[in-house]
Length: 232
Ligand SMILES: *Cc1c(COP(=O)(O)O)cnc(C)c1O
Image (tube, rainbow, N blue to C red; front, top):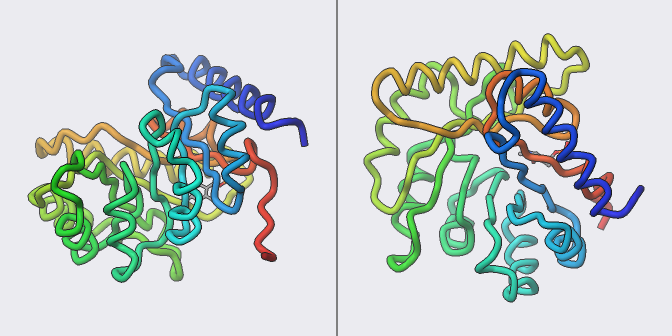
């Protein structure tokens, strides 16, 4: 595996090519570096290579890492993208700038209640179970509208858009079809005046299809940091 700086450069290049291929500006897509399971030192390497936005999936791991990265905190943005549990909501509300994985009103209410008064609004995406996976988290498309209308009323939360984690598919056309569906849901909500600007979709293996479908944030782990080791 080449150093993180080289990997980052090649991911940025992929994003530029994908944007060019569909007539979008490369500055329309934000790269979120997903650093879960990788140590603070890996984040520092990515930071040194110019990366400023990071994604984490496990609350405890992230809080420990953030403690070691206090010196970079003001200059970085941290996005929580993992499964949300009520009992961990306090840490998420206190430590993160964004949450992509809100999929029910109760957890949104807790994040709203627990967001520190002096902090800026927590930036929130609703996770949608876009391909009907039985075990996946995410609100069903049929219940999205109701959830979005409720979440946008909560104080200390800014509803920004939608996120999905589709089942992996090899075929770019099939990848694209699922991402188009999420984009369609965002469009539908915006026709009702919700003013959402964020589509968080696309990972190491399908970011091109996501960008073609309108992704504004791609979440990339493996292609930047390498394969994850869950054994420890
Ligand atoms: C781990 C993770 C990613 C990164 O996936 P890669 O395939 O390693 O790029 C993106 N989004 C979410 C929600 C994740 O949990």
